[in-house]
Image (cartoon, rainbow, N blue to C red; front, side, top):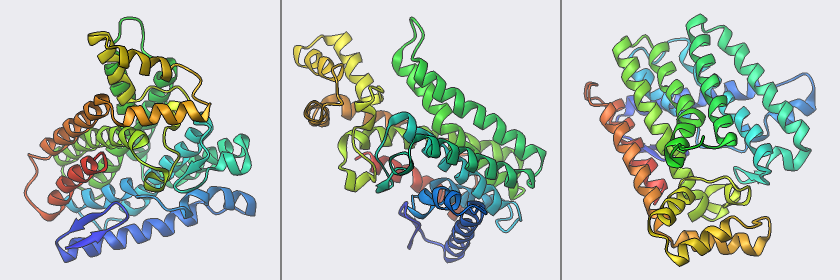
Length: 336
């Protein structure tokens, strides 16, 4: 049993381990090549988060799902590069929107060079992803375009908030399906599709990816409250400071509406206050960390991870499937 990649997946089969390790190494080379520019400053900015590392969660999924066809097919590694470049581009933009100071344990691009450079660098990465995607064929372009539309729609829905009468938790889960689930689903779809797997297998793995992606983001929501910056690689409570209600906060508000407990109402009032104040922000984090709403959010994470696991049922038993099942457990473990 060997641990593969920063995400901590243990792979029991030596041949699968070799394929995944080789694939991830090739993706890393592809990312560095795709982020080079004739302008040294652009190269520096574009490679800022590439060199900071990261879990490479989406490329890992491409490599694992490619095992259901030909994992050595020529489109597998480039499609993983496309998905990771797209993900990295969204991080540059997210950090501007969130005014984040830290990403992956280093200063965010907007903190280092300003918002304009961060936004334009994200655009540069989108352009490079599109350039690589063009060589993968019109179907790949269509799949990526649809996912990108869902991703942007999710971001807009988050910014706009739920419509009148819409349950805030349902709205938020729809946001996550777009913002995160769509791209994780594409990672699984590309791996299977580029490897030539049967269409039924491609569909199963796409459904798995969508659910796993939501579980992954819900685990991030929990970590944003529960972890220290040294654990998560980014500033804890960033969404709190910006007034973005993640699932623990939504579960708290739901509890207030149902029970109306004085201490819950007081915590909501604190969350609604100016959390750019460091003392208030620290108090809000401390109180949320011991609140039942955080445990409710953990349970939601488990539910989506279990749905991802269940989606894999039609696939034949093999080492790749076992690794995909284990990823469900790892996502839940991240949330505590």
